Image 1 (cartoon, helix red, strand yellow):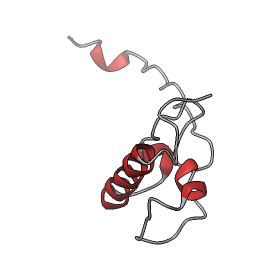
Image 2: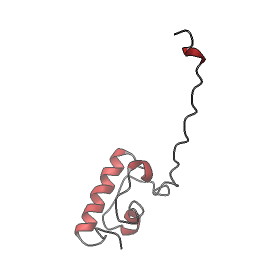
Image 3: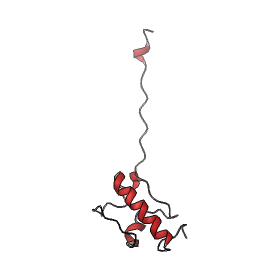
Image 4: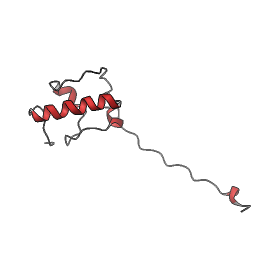
Length: 83
C-alpha cells in the first residue's frame, strides 16, 4: 500500500482529429429542403448524415438539417445511397 504513489501514469493517447467542419461556412438557423448544395455538405460520400461533431452544428440546427435532408430525399432531390 505504501508503494502506490510511486507508480508512473501512462500518457493518454492522442485523440483523433476530425477534418474541418462541414458546415463551417454556414451561419444561420434557416435550412430549406430545396437548398441541395447546402444539404450535401452535411452528407458523407455514402450519403449518410454527418454527426453533430463532424458537422459543427448544435442540437437545434442538427434537427432542422435532418428534417430537410429527409424531405429532400423523399422528393428525390438527394439520393438515399451514395453513388
